[in-house]
Image 1 (cartoon, rainbow, N blue to C red):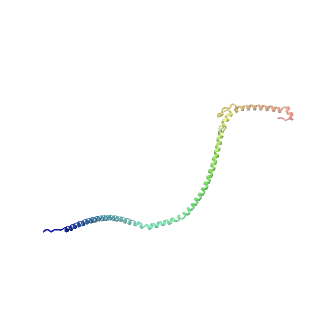
Image 2: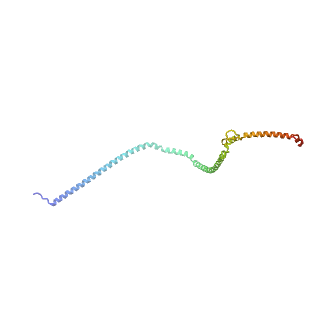
Length: 220
């Protein structure tokens, strides 16, 4: 006879199957997670290995550089000693500098005081010059007026006025002068001739016998 499986037995088997599938899924998830973790760790280890390799190369270069600088560093104390000796030699020359700077500052202050005084004098001189400029302007006005005054009898046309009086040459604005000094000179010559004749007659009268008798024989 075939074995008969009851309902309870089938229920138990189905439960065992579901549990096995659940465990199988969890195991798959954990395996995947572990695989990802392993891959990440491997990548980080590779990066760290590359970094360590670069550091090793840098340390090798630094070691080479330090080895090459060893000879120079060995002479460094001697070089420092030489510098100190040079500074000791310079020190006596540097010591007078503060006193010299103080003297220079004093001289500059003295110069500043003199410049302040000079500035005041220049300001006074400027005021005086402005006064002189005003006086010069007044003098300039007087000279301009003397050269060519409104009435026309200025310095610039003296020669024209003389020509007008003489009746010869260019007289400019004064025109011609018929009654000039030449005519007056001729008339003066005639008067002089008349005066000479009159003087001769007077001398003759003065020396006449009648006048001589009146003056007790005195003669002109």
